[in-house]
Each structure stands twice: as C-alpha cells, then as structure tokens.
Image (cartoon, rainbow, N blue to C red; front, side, top):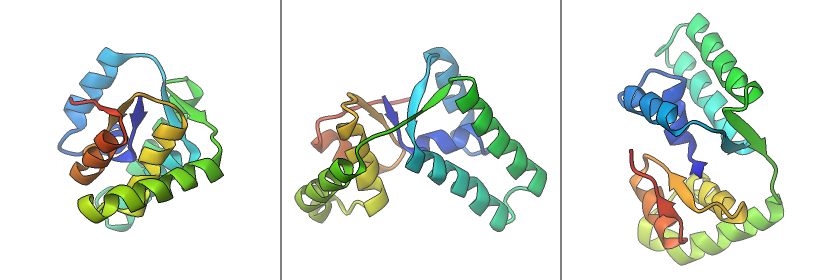
Length: 143
C-alpha cells in the first residue's frame, strides 16, 4: 500500500484526522513503504507547521524524531525506485488525467511512484489525487 504524505502527516502533527489515522495504523500493523520524496514531504510539512507557528520548535523536533524512529523501527521502510521511470509515468498520467481532474504535479508523482512500485492500494486524503489513483488502476483505501 502506498500512503500519500497527506495520509502520513497526521501521524506526526496533530490534525483533525490524527486520532482515526493512529487507530487505523495500529490495527494495520506491519511496515508501510515510503519513498525518499515522500519522506521529504512529511519533513517539510512539519517544517512548514513550525514556520507558520502552528507548532512550537520542540514539537517540530519531536515530530521529526518520531518519523525517524518509525523508519528505524521498520514501521515505515524507505523504498528506492527507478526515478526516470516514475517521472515518465507521471508525465503519462498527467497528460491522460490532469486536464480532467486538475491534479498537482506532486500528487501525480506519488501516484506514479505507487504504479512504478507495483503497489495495489493507495491511501490519500486529497480528492483529486484519489480520482487519479483510481484512474491509474489503484484500489483506494478508506479509513
């Protein structure tokens, strides 16, 4: 299963969906793949929350440490992929579907990564990305 950063960020920052996502993650167990790009997005979301004064500096440090802990403990595992192939897939998905769905480049890239990694399921909280993932043949995970 591929989890878009929109679905991972509530594990590290208190957000409206945090409670339900934490409960879902506890029920699911196992290890979830995350690309280096996805990790960078989660780290940046924490950084942006700090910039916007939504969280204190110590909370940002705790959130980054929790993400690193989840990777070190195997709750998330960093995956490598052929970036050229993923970017080519993103171009194809964008041409085929973005005119209809209005998906952003980063959202298209995450769907392309899931396709390139040959994952079957996709979790996102973004409506446009959800439509794109379904169009790409991925099964949508609902929480």
